[in-house]
Length: 193
Length: 83
Image (cartoon, rainbow over all chains, first blue to last red; front, side, top):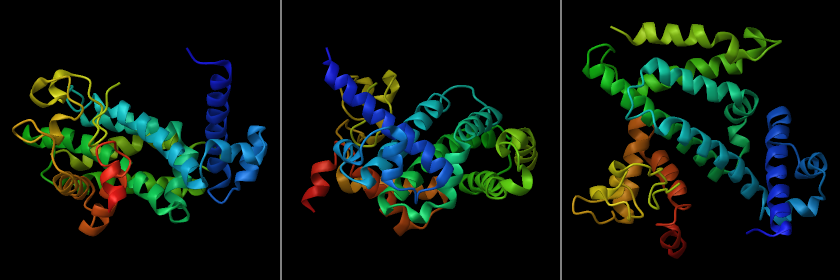
């Protein structure tokens, strides 16, 4: 049974994480912790009462992202999900986090090394599930025999290109929602025999 | 939800566990054929290979990523602190 103070502490911690996530999405990773504290309605000192360092805060944010991804894809490996289902699931997660993900792929070099490695590890989790599905469909003869990492990198390449050039592809609305169908169908056409 | 202490994989069904033993703290992929947990070096090599195969990364980069993620896992936290 948690005490009132403990619940309050957890709420504040979560508020800081959620606020930081939003500010980083809109302003990028050079936004200051002072800015985050102000938006979250807490003192600067409070931020560091909950997080040992800026690294720690960043790791928590990327960590939460990782948990969401892992749970979304974990069931897919064994089920009868198709490559199309996978692409839908991947796109959905990216659409839900479009602004933040764009910051991540654009400003990755600004982040501490450890956080960059977390991001890379996240991508491996996604790639792994993708590859399980692809390998299965290669065996049944529907998908071309191409190294799975190349198929993953091609898919990611397309998505990242649309995100990086969002101002050209979709200046006024989220870019992935607008092009999800086209990206998915094109990719499937390219990989299918 | 139970999570493997050696690689962080969620363990939800019997087949996620070594020899179907749901009491184990580590998953089927982190177990040796005899059911014991892999060593740090075995796990590091396995994770590095996993990253290289899934994304096509360079081996030394993949190893850095693997070690970084292992540092956070209960099975390896103490080991890496000693190094």
